[in-house]
Amino acid sequence: MVLDPTVWLDVPQEVSTGTLPGWERVDELVREAHARYADEVSGEVADYIPVLAAVDPELFGLAVIEVGGGIHDAGDALHAFSIQSISKMFVYALAIQEHGHERVREIVGVNNTGLAFNSVVALELNDGHPRNPMVNAGAIATTALMPGATAVEQWERVREGLSAFAGRPLSLDGEVYASEAGSNERNRALGWLLRSYGRLAGDPDEIVDVYTRQCALSVTAHDLAVMGATLADGGVNPVTGERVVSADVCRDTLAVVAASGLYERSGDWLFEIGLPAKSGVSGGLVAVSPGKGAVAGFSPRLDEAGNSIRSQMAIGHLSRSLGLNLFASAPAPAHAGEARVSSASEGERS
Image 1 (cartoon, rainbow, N blue to C red):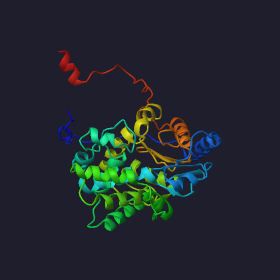
Image 2 (cartoon, one colour):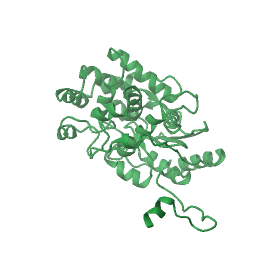
Image 3 (tube, helix red, strand yellow):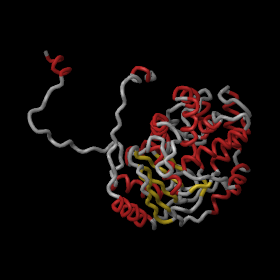
Image 4 (cartoon, rainbow, N blue to C red):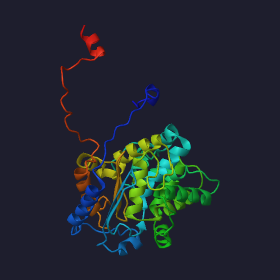
């Protein structure tokens, strides 16, 4: 059974998110986390995209952006790299802004596949439905929803939208794009498979090309933290003050990212760290704490699932030290006087 959201849409929504420590304390903890994991050397750089295999594995940047605009950068936070799969969460947000909650959910889905991010089997097992927008099939279907009469127009809407999230114009890394375009046979196969099931409008090769371009946008860890903080700030970029998407879109996006952002490791991540997060095979990772801010890391050495090892460690550290975990709580202070029973409970007991 799928819950029908219309049963509670008329209920006023309240939001309670807490606050971060003071600026100096946050800055101190960011530098502490960076220093603590800088010597970690486990994992391997991605090699299935040729240009990524040549990246310096010692690079390590960390950034926190607060919803109030506070900036905290450490290490190689301003080193440029390709955004890769992290683009999926922001294009998904733009698609919901354009088409609405239910339409995008119907086409793309919201549930974890439990299989690899580029799995063809997952698509076949689900009658061609991509299941969620964080795997490649779902991301391709999401990119196809971007407005534009041509692939060129769709690409420009993607670039402009992600630039608004970052608070600065983002540009294509041509070398990464060429490398990926020459080795993306599986993504092209996913595009045509989606088309064969009637789940993709337009030319699959053109849509996959737009998707390939969006993955090759050049960003920094600082940019990713600004982008994540925009989702944490109800859709308003905390650096530029520009509204990029609605607060409802942020909520929908972060829910899906929490469920599937780290692919088959998403449950482990949520259990240990308690934050919606998205990774990319270039070594980027961004995690969002609604109402507080976002943490982003960049380090090219990856685990078996394609997630940056240093970034996971540093963000886990900051989740605990900054109190970011969405599921963590402490007992409320005892109230003075006698405990009171609500009128509804009293009625049930009478």
